[in-house]
Amino acid sequence: MKKGKGSLAVVGMQWGDEGKGKIVDLLAEGAQHIVRAQGGNNAGHTIVVSGKEYRFHLIPSGILYPHTQCYIGGGTVLDPASLITEVERLEKQGVPNVKRLYISQYAQIVFPYHRLMDQLREKTQQVGTTGKGIGPCYTDKANRIGIRLADLLLPEVFRAKLQANVRIKNRELAEIDPHFILDWEPIFEEYMSYAAVLKEYAAPVEEMLFHASKKQERILFEGAQGAFLDTTFGTYPYVTSSCTLAGGICSGAGIGPTRIGHVLGVTKAYTTRVGRGPMPTELTPEELLLFPEHTVSREVGTTTGRKRRIGWFDACLLKAAVGFNGVDTIALTKLDILDALDEIKICTGYKQHPSFPASTEVLSCVEPIYETHLGWKRPTREAQSYDDLPKEAKSYIRCIEEICGVEVSLVSVGPERERTLWLDRFFDE
Image 1 (cartoon, rainbow, N blue to C red):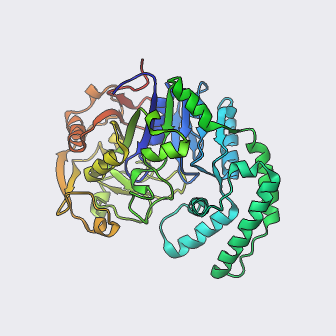
Image 2 (cartoon, rainbow, N blue to C red; image 1 turned 90 degrees about the vertical axis):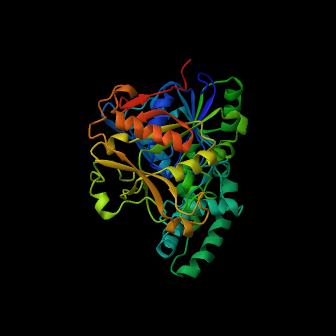
Image 3 (cartoon, helix red, strand yellow; image 1 turned 30 degrees about the vertical axis):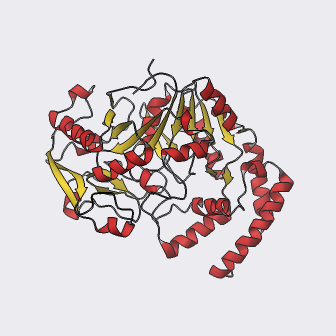
C-alpha cells in the first residue's frame, strides 16, 4: 500500500463495534484532517489513553491530537444537545481546543419528535434501533422536509420550517396516540439556544476538504457502524438509515471518489452484533461459555449499554464487505479475546450458497462451513511485534488473509494504543 501523503477511509466490515475508534485514534496521529461523514450519535466508541477513557458518539476521535482539524460532514444527522454535551465532556477531560471542530451546514438536525417517533416505532417493529431519532431524521431528509444546520442558523427560516414539520408530526402521532400533541414554540426556543453555540462551529467543510485534498494533505475519513448495517447492502431491515460503506463517505463528506486514496477495513477476530437480525456464526449457549464475560471481553455497547451477540469469525461476511468497500487492507482487532480457547472456528462458506445471500430470510437459515484451528493458549497482550505472536495465532491471521484476499496491516491485542502490532503503516513518509 502506498504510504505517505493522501487520504485514507476507515470502515467497519461487520455490524459495527469492530474497534474502528481505536484504529482511527492510532492513524490520527499522522493525519492532519479527520472527517466523520455519516450517521449520528447512534454510533459510539471508546478510546483508552494512558488508562483514561474517552467516549465518542459524533465528534471524530482524532480530536485527541492537538495538531488535527476535525469535521462533521453534511451526510450526518446532528443532535445538538448530544453534541454540545460531548464537547463539554471532552473539555472537562482536558482535550485542548475542541473548537478545532468544523460542522457542515448541510448536516440534518435531530429534533425531539424524531426521538419520539423512533421509540414508538421500535415498540412495534423491533428493528433494534438506539432510539436516538436517527432513522426518522433521515426519513425527513428523504422526504425533503428535513431541517439542516443552515436553516437552524436563520431564525425566521427555522421558525417556518419547524412549524410546518410540527403540523406534519402531529398528524402522524395522532394515528398512534391522540394524546401526543407537539407544541413548536418550546422546541423553537430550545433549538435557538443550541444555534447560538453551533454557529461557532459551522463552516464550509466541503470547500475546506477539497482544498486540503488538492494540497495532498493527510485526510482520515472515519466511517461509522459497519458494512452490514448499510441501508442498501446490509441485513435489511435490521440496518441503520445511512450508507455505511466507503462510497457513503464520498457523498457524506461532499468529496469525489478520486479523493479517497485507500480503504482500510476493520474487523474483529470473531463476530458480534447488537440487536436483532441474522448472524450465521452465532455461538451456541455452550460455546458462549468459552468466552469471557461480556464486560471482560468488552462486548457491551458504548451507546446503548446492550450486550453484544457473539459468533465465530465469518469470512463469507468479510469477503462481501471487501467487495462492497473496495478494501485495500485489514485491521484485525480483539485477537486477545481468543487467547484462552482450545479451538477456534472460521466460517469459510455457506452450504449451497456460493455467493453472499441478499435475502435476510435466506441468510437467517444458511448452514456455515467451518474450518477449525488450534488455539494458542497464550496471552497475546504483551506482544511487541507481529513476530512475538504464537505460531497458531499467525496461522489464524494468514487463513483470514487467504480467504478474503486482502492482507492484514495491523493487529490489535487490547484497547490501549500500545497494544497494537503494525505490519504496515499508512501515514509514514
